[in-house]
Length: 140
Length: 493
Image (tube, rainbow over all chains, first blue to last red; front, side, top):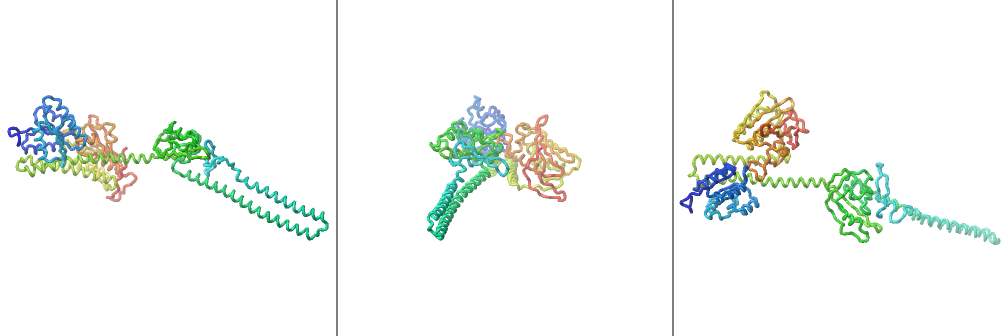
């Protein structure tokens, strides 16, 4: 990509069961210089996370096969991918989801619909801070 | 009225023996005491007569013994004596009459008052129960007997706990065994909600108020009981509707966030990154925006239809329609909307005409096809056909999806019901489609249900009477297009 890491294009894995959401997010990120991996389910997301070595994962919570929290748990159990920063990208504003996400160490919680520039900034920030951030972006 | 007093049974107009409010003994005054008051005046009469007799006899003796007295003096004295006696008799009569009238009037007024109180308690909608010592029922009005399912006169003598079992022993101590001179005890209560017990053993919610009524140094406990079953049912309905409304808002908000994300994302791309978009990405953008708009439109339409149904505003326009043509139209519309499953239709050649609202039946078919498309695996078949006889046309939409668990089949057509967790659902929709479908079918006097398929999947089928009968509303064949209100009455068989 991108401003801060001239020599590296960040690779983002987008996991959402709605293909149109995956497509629009991927287009936005590609337009900003990211490499994008696309998954339309939890299982496929886990597989791509292992095979594609993404730098950041954008993960939906409500998916029919495996929910986002379970995908996150399995990511953290796999030593090869346990350190990949994860941001939830979800339509749910439930406070318990937001607090639970922070409790288990999710690096960000972005609520749909999101501002594309804000999403891009959140991804950069998360990568730069090495997964030490905890960002919550409410829809606006 | 004292504890343990027995109550007089008074005959009612209906010939039933009901316990009266008036006890046999009232405040230590015998019931005959009122009419014994004039006895004093009887003695007074007697004394006056004796006095009159003595006066006349005295004057007669004086006349006999004193011969010198003239005839004239004798009659003068006799006249004076008679006048005095007459005046005394008149005064006595007036006094006696007044006393008798007062006594009899008070008795009549007392009886009238008691009868009025009896009528008041008879027509009361709440149960009025009086209990004496140890919680023994001494009186229960007709409303109470009806409420608890007892025959007239059956409740007096029973323990209050036989109808209000949750008044436990400690409570009985407080309410009924407490000495009267101690006044209201800590157990005296205002209004509480507990459970009542009918004679058939069934329980129901009641609102109960208990108060102590002091009576002649003893205490009577007055228990007023109101059956709040209907109120509780109404409350439960309101709570359910409120919960449904909350869920609707949650799900509708969730539903709207998806298309909003599409609109916002592509508006950014088309304004800020238009030069970098490939033609394929541009086409995707337009298609996805259109899909998102369709999703919003469906949501709005579903909400609109549901609202019209709830308000009884949706109508049925009766006309003659051909089932086969409706199926062809439904399949065509579903394909145009981008159905990803193989739609297999089979129609029959017969030209059975159906008396129905064609557009509404088409709406039901499209709802079922949309559901089959949403919940079936890609590249599976969705079959649609109809069968008919002289009385009924049955439509089938059968998929190879995961099927519907038996315990959920009855709920499937309820408003806002979704097979998955409403908040965690990922499939578009807010659970109104099948509710709308059932309402339309019911308005036609038909039925709708889901059946499992042997090789997996579900068969959603609905039947409509050929004659187009509406529950309670006969169609008018002469009128080619008539409109009837759509009623939300289940016609499932």
